[in-house]
Amino acid sequence: MTKEEAIIKAHSMYAYETSEKADEKEDHFDALWQSIYDVCQLATFGIIDDIEKDEIDEAIDWLKETQSFTKDYKNKEIDF
Image (cartoon, rainbow, N blue to C red; front, side, top):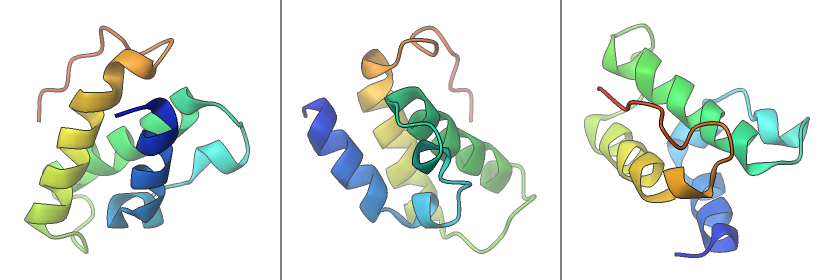
């Protein structure tokens, strides 16, 4: 997956729809990645409950697959 494909995929995910969509304010991939990460973390710990397990799993898979495209999150642990 290219970075451009990753952005398109992220924008089509429900996790993005429920996120803060930080990439709309800061036009860079790290902002998008962090938005998806935050939703996954909040959903995993039950803080938000309007996202289905398969939607969380899709977003977590996306995070893992695209982490190498980030600048600041290359070594961030995804432990949920």
